[in-house]
Image (cartoon, rainbow, N blue to C red; front, top):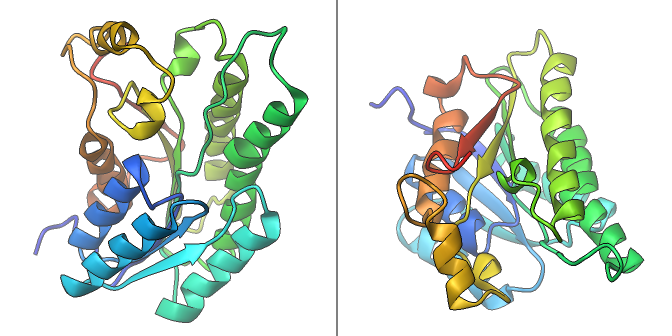
Length: 248
């Protein structure tokens, strides 16, 4: 058996029905974990993912929960424990990408970005920590955009910088419980969210930023998350791993 096997573990992935989240769900399930995941608008994709995992012999549960709703997040944590009996791994992947110049950025977009990208991480982590025992893993999805200072990305980048700060501090607050808290900061990744609103030229330019000269695939990010979730990642704590192909 691999030292990084997830057999017997239970995971909850916030925002797991598509893109990077779906890749993470599949990778954790392939490692042997029972995986619950939340979704808000991609009902068909969520049900398809759940069905395909169950058909392949994995334990999976799709949970409808808006990450902007604190009560729904807490309920998703409770539902995971009720369904599978425990919670070992929390992946806070839910996020929104609202970009725009200072003069045009609406307060509504600001508040929703903050609620989903920052508050949901706090709420889910707080709820999950009450169930986790030794060997627990909390993994937050950040970004590498916050290191580029791109115009229009101020609010998005600020929320992800907040996530990285919380990651380091929460790892210390959980001292003595053998629970690690880490973050993964992807670079440009080939998902629907990334391609939305971008021209072909913009996509090509961003693909050239890493020395590896390509966009990441969702599976590239899922591999890093799976490493942190398993036994092999147990000595990494309070860190942000830049999974960006060397971009910054």
